[in-house]
Length: 222
Image 1 (cartoon, rainbow, N blue to C red):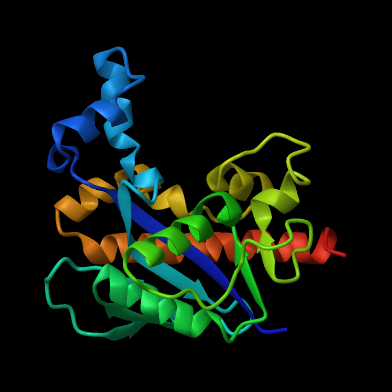
Image 2: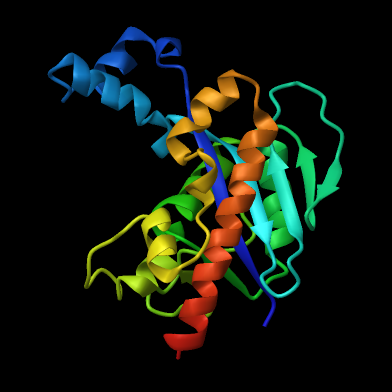
């Protein structure tokens, strides 16, 4: 079966860029300064208030893949590193290339992809005027087309959810967070123009997901 691991990194829009009415709407239920700051920091979690800055794809069978990333106008030439081809572009270009490439695979593998990555990609695609090529939000209980490891390892919500880092440590897998970067830092890294640091962090997420998938595939899949 041809399969590919997918992971994305996102950033939130500048809160100050919203008009007053939109700001009031976003802060509607935030009563304290701390709650307001939490709302502003959570903009990257929603497709209407954030954007895709990195899309990583890794074939778990060959170890090869592609890292599509935004560089915010900074020219970064295409290059290959550790089996992945790195290519910069706009958000729209990233989405167009992703949907063109992913349509050739029979199965995608994600961690929490049904709740985050895939809906985010689909909504951002519509906003950018990009037609999606596949629907990976189909029948939830069949992992043959979309294997979401969060769904599989919680047995479709029957047990508690843990983050990727905790699963990795529990299974003895090298965690992508071991090098001091996690998803909450992506927005700040982009402000610092550390675009490749984010792309390489996404690559490490793909490798961690690959390790977790191998355990699931060997011991829990049917």
